Amino acid sequence: MRLDKLLSQMQVGTRSQVKEYIRNGNITVNGLVVKKPDYKADEQKDHICFMGKALKFQKFTYYMLNKPSGVVTATKDNRDRTVMDLMQDAVGKDLFPVGRLDKDTEGLLLITNDGALSHRLLSPKKHVEKTYYVECEGTLSSEGILMLEQGVDIGDEKRTLPAGVSNVKQSDGTYSMLLTITEGRFHQVKRMIGAVGGTVTYLKRISFGGLVLDETLEKGTWRALRQEEMEQLDKQGG
Ligand code: URA
Image (cartoon, rainbow, N blue to C red):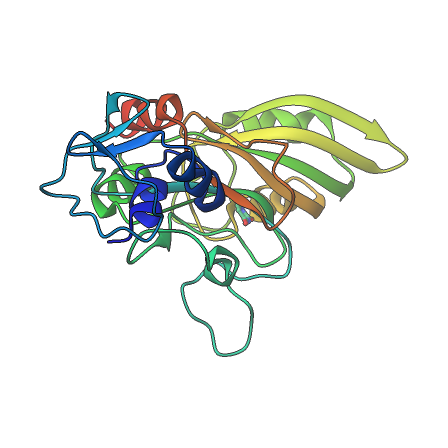
């Protein structure tokens, strides 16, 4: 694999950053400085160092995407743009989104090729927390909020599990709040709000499994997860 591609896959930096590191002589392969970004390196055999520190090849890659409204959470779609269309330059084979956000929902989406982690994070048994910033209209009473907190009938066999509600703000029939759920039922937040007399007008996921949306990411942009963020996810899916 090209050295610059391999280094960005190892999350040393973006493709342009790693090219810069290579040209500046910060990278050695088997003890020798390599200054060509297109140098063919072998990730299994070569000993690669960045500023004297040995790098380990990562089998999987992990990204956070700030999903904009208007794109579907799928790898392919015949009609709509998908979240993977936004990830064209991401390094790593067979990337896919972990879980689903509706076409009109924005915010944090984890993109990876680590099937086992995805499985753990989405398992109904693990109760991984997801927090949404919700704006809605309607008549949302304090009883309604209490129902969300205790578990609400959304027409499924079972009520939802208790949700966390915080930062409730109200002005002229519109409300905003943070809602934390530990399940992943179809249109769950919209149906929960609907069950207590509201209609969601805006929905954005701000955290998932301890991973918090980086608010400096513009809508539609993404970045590789940092080491501490990956460790956080690992703990949650445990
Ligand atoms: N709940 C919803 O209703 N929609 C989403 O996109 C995510 C959670």
